[in-house]
Amino acid sequence: MSNVKIFIVEDDAIIRATLKLMLTQNNFDIAGEADEAEDAFDKINESKPDLALLDINLKSNKDGIWLAEQLRIHHNLPIVFLTAYSDGKTLEKVMKTKPNGFLSKPFKQVDIFSSINIALQNFSLAEESLKYSPKYIEQRSPQIDFLYVKEKNVLVKILFKDVSYLKSDGNYVEIHIATRKYVLRAKLTDMLSKLPTDKFVQAHQRYIVNVQRLNAVGNSFVIIGEEKIPVSKKFASGINGITG
Image 1: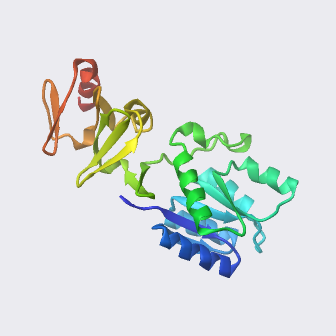
Image 2: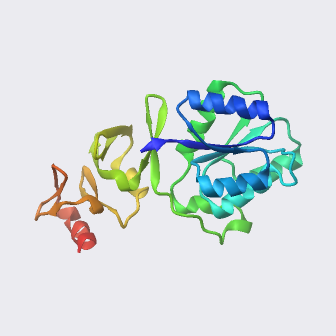
């Protein structure tokens, strides 16, 4: 669990400093910054941010569109473009990179927060989301190993490996980690589709468990930490199959 890390690519030092201030005030972490596309690509490779804010027009030889294309090939992260007025030809190139959001200049703090939150929440965890344009269909990016949960207007990043189990409670799902739980509005079946199948299985109509967190397996239950979780006959084969 950690704050969301944002990488900023902007060649105007004042705008870049303003973005950093506004982001930190909204509980985001700054993964890094750059004013040139190629330098940004190298730094992003090292810092592995959760989202990139990219200015389209940069003073370097390569622009933000080039950088977005490279990120689509080598990474799987949401991209939000910083935009002033752009001509139709430029916007056509931008759209081919399938950006996850736009932030228009001049921007307000509330605009930044909304654009980033929407981009993160809409960012698909499925492999289908990696198929952006024909040029990149054969390229594959690393599998995402986390999800975002919104709590008190702040997005919290939760690593799959830290999740012990999920419990359905009507139209809500509790995500339990070792130290606490998070609650989000969702269906358990929808959550299951976003989780890696080699680690998470449904044990009961109301429970999904992380098999790497199992302390014991009984005939009709599993134990994770101090929690005894029921296993129904309908889903017992799934538990047995993955635990061996």
